[in-house]
Length: 356
Image (cartoon, rainbow, N blue to C red):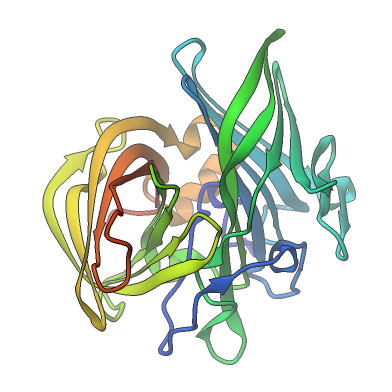
């Protein structure tokens, strides 16, 4: 089989950045950083991951375009919903190239009857699944950061990955139509973007992304991946902080992670750190403590796809899962951060490819 990776595993393998011998500088993104930008390489994948949170609901939604789907299927959408009222729901849909309409000059993507676009300072998405419809309208005050510092060359001459926090913790309104019952949505959320022409399963087995915010309004992001056994250093992760006006006030490459306790997901069997402390290269006085507070969901990627796609995934992946948690973050870095910098809280997601 020519194609090496199933479209719907990649709908959930969306995260942050990657290893390079030289570290690019993290910078503040603009809209042009996350416009549709395709490549002809076999491993091309571009995805936009959205999240929404309010007092009852957690929503994770993804638009994806790729040339790695089976047959002529090259684009798709997925959504995960967790609520005390309607429980957990995970839906995916795949489409062919004839169903894809895009604009390279402005933020607009249409995959059959699913759309994402920019209009009058706001970003909106619409998704349609059997018995479930979603509409979200995001009103960000400022843009986020490029976690990869632009394109990272991961294999010479031209294999790269580009990963961005488009915006985060912005005001969000919309609705969720669940089997005819319409739930009005008012909360906060954001969007993350990935563009790559190199398959992630060839060098990594686990990815992670955490977005958190404290009571002063500072936003903290950390993410990266755990490499395979031959990967230099074993992992690659970075951290960045935005102030209340969206200015970058801290960036750091993680040099060491000390796992205090582990947490085992009962559905997948995967273990993730329950409490860990990160230290940074060239910032000896700085540490970041991450503690899990509550699990949001455990998504079995094989549970909602066709038998054919399930077979394709199992050729390369033992047990693909997405795990999501509420986490608490304490960043201690007196030389770089304000004295009044309290603990942050947010959503942490893991994208599990294989046991290593």
